[in-house]
Length: 405
Image (tube, rainbow, N blue to C red):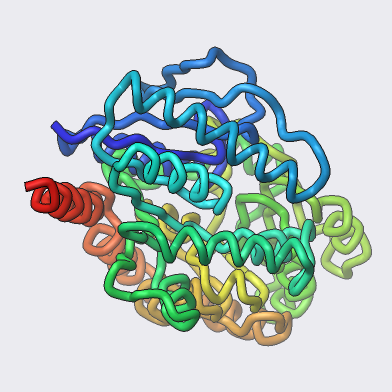
């Protein structure tokens, strides 16, 4: 049985899009007969034992915390993680090392793999220098931006195989001069066994929140600037000119929370904008049940044009109606007018107009729900997508066996 050690920035029991994708990958590999373990770097800040079992998965932890001046701190992180990887390899004897972005994990995994003469796979979920720009913690073209990009280029160039989560990321790497022949796609996916039919509307919660008959436009997630929630708030008064009962339900929190609440309070439609704050993961379905259209108004940027989000896929898996800005990451997931709506990015007036027409034509929604679910089942079900990993693993092991022979 093949054994694969996954190198991770952080993992369960923390909850994030990153950890949920990791869980889906590891669980699906387990179900396909591949033995898996994970190891996290020093940026996994959750308290826990050195070896932790969560939901039937085993994770090893790297001790210590990042410290020191910039650049030196990151190299110390890489070295600490490399040492821990090598210790786990000596104890568990995996066949393959599979590192997941960021490039710090990639470089630690690459160095360990080369020292131990193991095949090395690197997976890019986003370019972290662009993600830093998107969430306001970095600046495009800065020294840190360029160093992060250079480090990732080095890892990609030396990896035996590379995965990206979408065509946008793969195309960018090929444009940089990397060998497209070794870069495969492992798209965002969902475990369809976890999603049934949407639950009925939670009338008690609707009354408690002041939700009327709608239509209700909703966003459930993290409030980062690149998500474009300010444009959605700006669009609501215009939408209500054609749909007077329209309300906006914003569930979650994040860096833009205070600014968005201030914008909403100053809006002429302030009474129709409802913030709930963050809600427990187990309660999220109740809030989903109140939403007629799940909106993803991401702004246009390198990050949003290159990276596909997970939330629209999860929504379509549950036969929910989705509307999203017409940026590259969304276009890979949503076919306009077939599986959902694509509206102009960075354009509240265009967004309002598109949503108003979309709501008026809601007789098309039942077919759209089924088309969205069918698309996820065909192209984004982990039960199928996991075969992409297994094929690459088998090729690498066969190549190594031939080289030894």
